[in-house]
Length: 332
Image 1: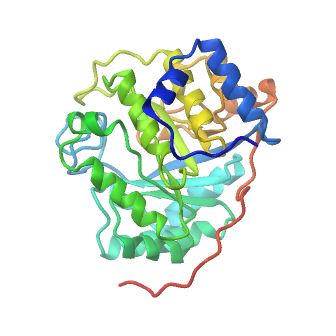
Image 2 (image 1 turned 90 degrees about the horizontal axis):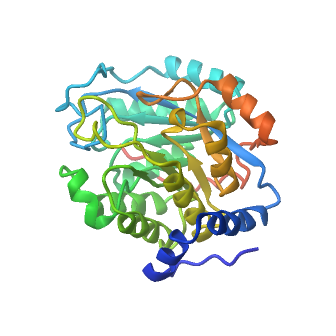
């Protein structure tokens, strides 16, 4: 197996990222195939459980209250609504169920109490349960852990230097602090970024350096291509070239050999051949369903046809085992 490193230098990552494309794909594919389950791709479903009205100013996000988009504000869904959708997702082949709420941070109130109940309910389906709720305190992370949360998503989005250009209502350190709080529990970390924001290759390299040099690599790294949404500050950004997605996925695979690299937003603008190259370069997860929070996603039947053609098979839930639940006091 490939040695796991947490001390990658900027120069090393730069050389990998800028390798001739076919050489880069070959190197990443070689590392990926050292895992006997390389043809397994995790199927995840992402649901917005509370939509719009967010006070943040993330330049890419149609859910920010300050932007004029077509997103309609929706209150937090009920436990019954979410569990019904989760059941359908499992029937469609999903082994991970991810839930996002358009909050700046988690508050200790009735909404958070309901999220705890939702996590407990989805857990009964034997799916990996993931949440993306904004910033978390250590006590809140412990409470989610006790409820059985498997993963917490908190993307870095871009590099530390580029971050304030994209978001001004919180800092890069705020992002890292939440990830550190999650790491104090037995919840796994899901953290990646978005390309196509107007960042430079150096920003992408710096973001990958931050992720790959964490004391523990994130168990899951989503690589998103910007979905340009009318009404957001980044609506006029050009489409992300597929070779840029391949470079990001391949470099992430080389730097973090055991991490699940998620081919996330932007697949509707990729051909089957484009996606095949991403899988060859080391991607081993996709999201299914008509929407990723509020943006479009390929139809499930298209994805299943792609799996059949490429010889891919769905990855089972808890492939790396369920985390041992560590008893913690209930936090009010």
